Image (tube, rainbow, N blue to C red; front, side, top):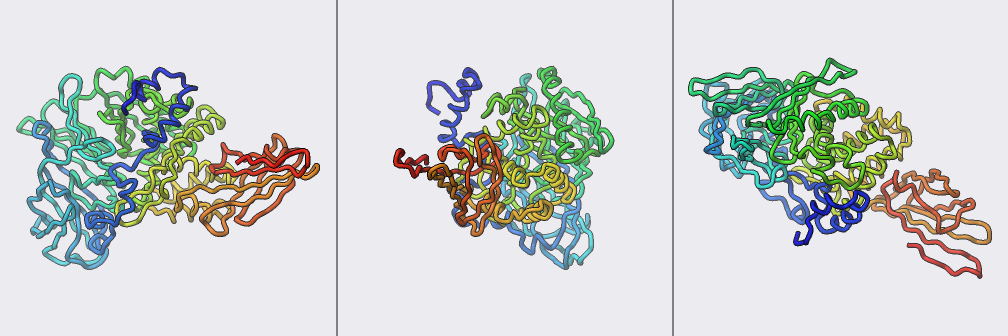
Length: 591
């Protein structure tokens, strides 16, 4: 931005109370990044409206060449050379045939060369490539129910991340001492930018082994547990890691550098203690020991609201990275500069009380890594619940009032530009509103249900019912409808499948001593009905249940212009028109 004072400079010098004023104006210009995230590597804005390309269909569609087999395991073995910025290795892909077939689709970016593909360590398979898809012709027919393994041998220089983590690829950099520091981020862009796999959300293997060979003196930290560290004859070192739970392809990661390491554990109420391992640059060790104390507070809050940490066998790791952060399963990337908020920024005072990256990215261990979307169109499942989790952390630490201030501080970042659910089958996400708006909508849903015991039972139930699974919006909506005790069909359709939020049209009128309110919802969904708390008397909020048809209620001792909605609990618009039928007063419009 061409301003005399940068956004960051303003936020560092301005009092917290003054910051929202600046942020509201700035949100109109830049969409309130970083709190209005666009999808990582996904199409946004006008690009979402154009017809899908052949490459997007190949990546996003569940064609017969993908549904014919199910991934069971991966063994990724790579040699990474920071000096050459290159990668060489193989991936052994375990799969089970869902039907008889002879041809399948894998995925690998075209800038990486495939040397050969071998079936069951015996016979080579032929293959062709189109865009980033790899079509493999098996030398024999895979019989339904049979298990096999394809090993893909490949090499090359993987995509370099231009703006990690938002644009995927490798980050080849150096630490303060000049040592290589290498990480990868690929959500949205695709895990196939650096390793061959079934690059679709449904391609979630049951377990993964990650073998990373790197130059002497460096360390690799990847997902899961370290099985072995082996110095090879040429002096390079191989680190073997194992993930014992299902994992999203984009969560598989490497972190190469010279790290300082310290550890702790979290005493879970529902399972054995969870190991906590932290890897940071040596010069940041003391800062990390202080900042990472928030991890236990996060674990306690999320265990309370969602259930125990989903991956206890693999433990939890927080690893310093040169980018802001990423939710790699059991190996969360951290780059928040040891500051409150998002690198020192926040849309409310409450947001500065905690480290945003620790709290948000770790929420994805529950929402995104445990319960995962089956299509990129439903990435809101990851991000809306992940963002809402931030407010629950605030609630657990500072109370419900503080949480509501935090949630409502996100309103300036909502664009209402597109629906939060995107188009299916083409690797396109919904609106970036899935963060801020998603958090506000889930808070609204909580207050529509108006039964916290039931609401938190639903959150726990979603985690248990869909544990380690991929799901759709219909799965989530169906479960909530079944357990909420209310008809929420119109709610989900309006908030997630349409752009506009519900608008409550109200006409209040005083005739003599009687004040009435005439009201209805203005929405896209026919027969929409949603309860909302409004003022029916001074200082008193009560539920009414507006529909798309006009209704009328009598208000008690309330001036027509003083009608209000509980705007901190319900994310809706209000259009209020009031009048006095009294010759001593003229009609006024409070729109």
